Image (cartoon, protein in one colour):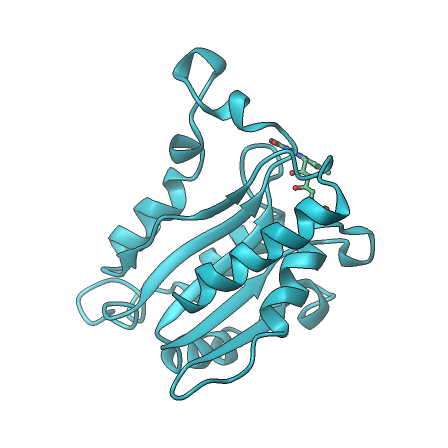
Length: 176
Ligand SMILES: Cc1cc2nc3c(=O)[nH]c(=O)nc-3n(C[C@H](O)[C@H](O)[C@H](O)COP(=O)(O)O)c2cc1C
């Protein structure tokens, strides 16, 4: 399994949770036939101009795509939306001849400032499954296989020990 982790954090230098998850992903050794490629997309595109062809080639050469980001306003940082709009193009990702993601697995790894209790019931607004439904729907639309996301709640309050444990769980998520 070749896994591609695309990280979208606009201020990685100030990140606690996503920086730890990204480092954990980067630390994974290449195994027999199993590799994890990690890209910091804001570092890659500081001017926001996405190299569409390069991104499409990366996707084509991997089996599983992980979109990693901090939850911002019940959504993602802006570059991920731009990435979807630009990279998941008609004729490539969808449309009559657009089947590039058909055999791929897509999932999300996100960190939320709010605690899990805030995302449990509809009484509190929406469940995390509902919040992340645009990604599930996107995967469905491009005929990819959706994998249940990796979610970190209370991301701003995690102790160093809890974050280290979460980072280990992320490594398992990425290599399972
Ligand atoms: C602009 C902005 C919007 C945010 N919106 C949400 C939100 O909708 N829900 C939530 O649980 N946390 C929200 N947060 C908190 C972030 O999700 C949290 O700071 C982040 O996951 C921590 O990860 P980091 O250490 O990698 O930055 C928001 C933070 C910022 C800066």
